[in-house]
Length: 110
Length: 225
Image (cartoon, rainbow over all chains, first blue to last red):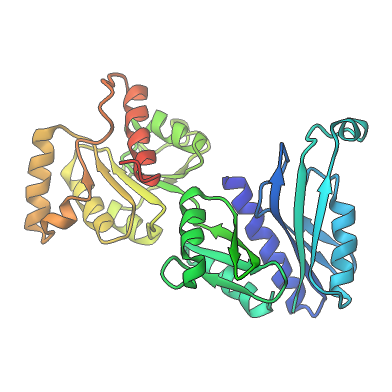
């Protein structure tokens, strides 16, 4: 819990710093999880308009898709709700042990 | 989310306020709310999210709102770098508390006895005033010396600390309450004191006493005591 809190503070601070520097910024947040999932609801990832990011919404398996959505949102697309499911077999194939499902909300900082 | 809301959330966290971020999942709104000022339709979810320390989704007017708790870190301030403080500091750190050990007696407050812990050698009243205990902070006095314990308790009772405990027997606690009443604290203020400190688990060794104290602190934090 303490670590998650520390991470959140760092993500929020970086998002604010990017915004203050005139960059486009989006924040992705885990809304819900089902089954075992490495990051609980409320976990955050901030992305700038170059694709640089801080924080985490998974063990790494969905970050690339979330960052792609974040860049769309920064470019003017509406806020997005993304669902990710990972079957047990697929999870093992890519080296992940979670096999859970996760919903992520992505919105721009305006 | 508007940049102003992000700034408000960061400021609330820096000020150790207990708040929640409410995000309408259609992207229409995001607000920093407290239990007291949350919209009625969200109030119960905000209270539950803060109590259970987890993000929850509320249904509001056919839409969904993500409610994330933003709580200050749990902290424990120990006054007295005494023997019992060694296991108590270590166990509290394992339980996620940021621990500070306050003792102006430098021979006691040594890094050798408290490896990796934060030591503060100011006088207890100065240290507690500077550390600004909040609603997620517990303060426990351990010195058995009124010259050190009493100023700490006087300072702690003036803060919203969720737990204030004092090591010592029933008899010394009664004397302590009398001194604090003399110092101007009424019965309601003195009722906040946990003394003799700790749950009654028959603890004997310093480590067992530490378990009993930490158990009582956690029960207070979680609303079970």
